[in-house]
Length: 69
Image (cartoon, rainbow, N blue to C red; front, side, top):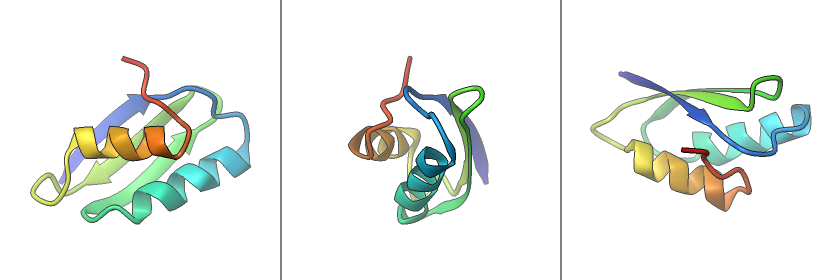
């Protein structure tokens, strides 16, 4: 299991957090998603044999929450 924290743009509320959870839990290999609107960060626990940080970042961007590098 791998844990990665992503800084993202525009997490404003609980609705944003729920949208992020929904988008990422549909990605194979993702085990837990913990978005935090106070810090604009998303912690993701995932199986690195099933998905990658790049795939997670792409999914976040597609949901409207691009990763800040």
